[in-house]
Image (cartoon, helix red, strand yellow):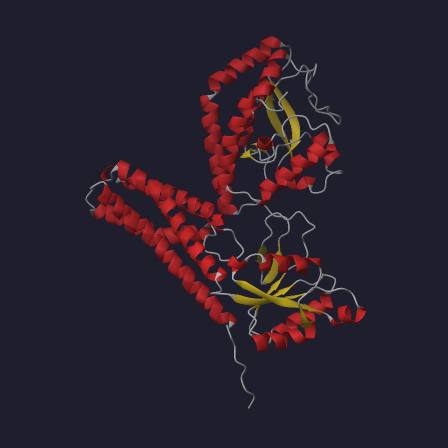
Amino acid sequence: MRKRRRQNKPHGLLQRYARMVWILQKVIDATLVAVFLVVMSLAYQVYFDAPYILLAAISFLITPPLFQATGLYYSFRGDHPAAEYPKIFLGWVIEVLILLILGYLTKTSEHFSRLLITTWLLVTPLGICCFHLMVRMMLRQLRASGHNTRKAVIAGTNELAGYLAQELNQSPELGIQFCGFFTDQSCLESGRPWRQPLIGTLSELPNYIQRFKIDVVYIALQLTEEEGISKLMYALQDTTACVYFVPNLLTFNLLHARVHELHGIPVLAIWETPFDALQGSMKRITDIIVALLVLVLTSPLMAAIALAVKLSSPGSILFVQRRYGLSGTEIPVYKFRSMRVTEDGADIPQAQQNDPRVTPIGAFLRRTSLDELPQFINVLQGHMSIVGPRPHAVAHNEHYRKLIQGYMLRHIVKPGITGWAQIHGLRGETETLDKMERRVAYDLHYLRHWSLWLDLVIIVRTIMVVFKHQNAY
């Protein structure tokens, strides 16, 4: 009878281990929420009676599924620890809203100490973040010291393979010990240079995995080598190593590349909206709340501006210009009229310093960005967001989309009143192609790193930038 091969870490065992870890993490997170409530009651000397017990029980039950929905319980060693924080805060905000609604519907809010509950709501997400950071730091320290490590090899010796090996070698906290490269026989016979340490050919890889108990295989072959990739993946099915395919997509502007499943068929998203349905809903709710607050608070100011625009020069109060919105569809964007002309044709000269078209009141409005206040109406209409890539006139879009690679990717999301580019000084005129390229680069950076926390940072920094009147004319 054929002797059964000894297996180091069966893939099924790794999956069961990962599930156990995340189940434990969910229980601990839910327990922390309840424990913090108990600690707050002791700190404020409030009797922990039936309403508090019920609140603790409800919080314990709904915390894990809400954090699960925000994508918190997903493990990948290459993720930065800070990537968990927005997910924790988003899940907690949703939980707070649910608890507030339950308290309102059941008329039980008066049973609770407002100071205690407020402190609990503020302390809990910070405590959970600290706990997750501590766990991450402990695991990384263990891996850096040689514990909980996994041995890995790379199939391929191209530039991508070299870059991947460099990242593995320079990141001991990942706990991945890189052993070497494997290449195809034709590469060896052709005399082409290959990377070191070269262990052997692709045909020798399966036996090497079994002999040296390799845990991870990264396939970094060229996409044109379809036949070789197919043969290798078929051979690797006889091993217990975890296999990852690393497509050479570094030359593309990847936007939240994720793997989806379409009726069992894996689909790799190259360009995709940065947020899922839940995050999109949270962003939309935030937009509506902020837009309503701004419009209500600034309504007397907007009335005064409207009167000043009307009296200062002939023409309409609002200037409506066609711009590209979500998915490249045309939307009307509102501004207080700041010029003597209302240009919206095929050729629209950008505003320049000391532009004769700008009215005296318009110069003040543009310098302080008050001319853009009506765009909060666009936000309520759903055409725009508070934060996002700034919309450009249709004529400018059609011009620059032919000159700048990835220009139209800005329209994967709704345009914003402010954005990542604007807080980095890229406001106003873009008289050179280089300036527009930099603005697009900042917009794409925002799309790659989007989070509700980043939106909040941009809003706060926008207020500071507006007061400096930088590049606004």
